[in-house]
Each structure stands twice: as C-alpha cells, then as structure tokens.
Amino acid sequence: MQRAVVQGSKRGLALLAGATAASGMGLVYALENSVSASGDNVHPYALPWAHSGPFSSFDIASVRRGYEVYKQVCAACHSMKFIHYRHFVDTIMTEEEAKAEAADALINDVDDKGAAIQRPGILTDKLPNPYPNKKAAAAANNGAAPPDLSLMALARHGGDDYVFSLLTGYLEAPAGVKVDDGKAYNPYFPGGIISMPQQLFDEGIEYKDGTPATMSQQAKDVSAFMHWAAEPFHDTRKKWALKIAALIPFVAVVLIYGKRHIWSFTKSQKFLFKTVKGREPPKAQ
Image (tube, rainbow, N blue to C red):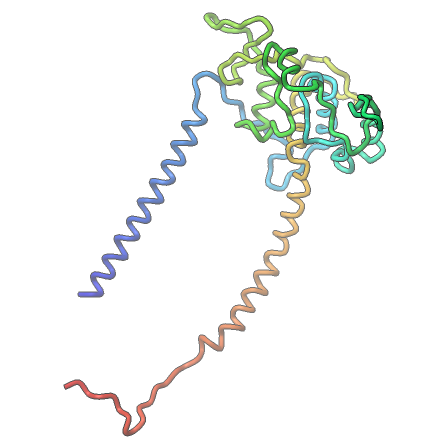
C-alpha cells in the first residue's frame, strides 16, 4: 500500500514537471514571436554570411573594405566610441597600416597649458566622433542624433541581415504614407520612416583593392565591418572553441578512468553482518 502511494506521488511529480516545462517553452515561444512580429516593417532575409558558421571566421578583405565604407560614408555622422586604432593591429591591418590610418585622423585634445588643439592620432586613440556632443549631432540631423555604431550589429534584431537590408531597402513611400523633408521611407526600419536618407549608391566610393563598389557590395562590406567592430575577438573565440573541443575527448577519458579507479573499490565492497552468539537481537513477541 505504501509503495503504491510513493509510486503515485512520483508519477504526479513527473507529470507536474512535464506540464511546467511545456508551459515554459510555450511562453518563451509566444514572447519571442510577439516581439518579432510587426505589421509596420519588413523582416530581413537570412543571408549566407562568411562568418555565420559555428567555426567560420571573418572575411578580412570584406571587413577592410567595410572600414573604407565607414570612413568615407558613415563616419560623417556616426561615431564608434568603443573602437580604437589599436584594435586594427594584427586583425584587419598591420601595425604600420594602423599607425598610418591613425595619423591621418585629427584628434581633439588639449596641450600642456590646457588650450584646445588638434593633433594626429595614435594607436591608443578612439575613432574620432564627428560631433562634439549629442545636441550638436541632433541639431545637424533634423533633431535625431545618429546612434553610435560600435555595437549596432549585435544590438538590433536580425544583426547583420538587418544592417544590410536597412542600407539597401530604401523605397518610395506608398500612397497614404507621409514622409517629412529630410526623412526617407524604409520598410525594414520600425515604423517605416527613418531620419537617415539613402547613403549608399553604385560607385559611390572607390575601393583600394579594385572591387566594384556596387551598393550591395558596400552594404555587405560595411555590415561585416560593423559585426567585427561589435565583436573584435570573434575569430579568437572560435579558435579557442576548436582547441577546447579537441581536448574534450582526452579530458573525458582521464575523468572516466579516474572515476572508475576511485569508485571501483567502494562499489565492489561487500559487507557481511554476522550475529555474535549471546548478542542476538530480541525476537518479536
């Protein structure tokens, strides 16, 4: 009787745990889809990025071209406050190239007397901000301050796909949609109305390596650069993952052998209890 009660309790707990898990997964699915669903904007297509695989690395040539796009187009309005020129060294540039790139920039600083000056950049400097403060940035852009792009590729739902689609998705506004002066219609932007007009055009810049600078090529390259800027350690992280994955079988063998060696004596012990004459347990009446 007692055993049947225990088994019934276990069965009830198992059913309760299963129902709770199913409810939790259903809630997560509902919340995820409620956040993703919207009738005001179009969701970006999933594109085959070179770095999207679990063990895939960045296309460094594309990232370098993306920096050219950022420098010639995006840097006029957008900052990258978390990126220093030292981050370029041994990742997308050599040390000499990074030093030369930094020296081309004018960095706002103060001299020994506290007077404002501009000097050539060095490796420890951040990429320069196009505006002195957010109010100046908003005043120059129809009241909307351009966001910092350091983490943009990871901060938006859709990531690289969203950035690429946003840069290439400008359209004429449909009938009934009012677009104010200085703004544009982009179905990939929440609400459809964006304060940034179209910035990329075919042959809008000229790549140093001679790659044809079509609009889609520029969007692809700058999307790759923005992801690299948001995650400069991306390739290093995946290299360490490969090294750790290669060590797992050897570590597992050592752990399994150690466990069997430690516990084999304990598990193989046999305890035999013998009654000593004269010390027998009392018999039930």
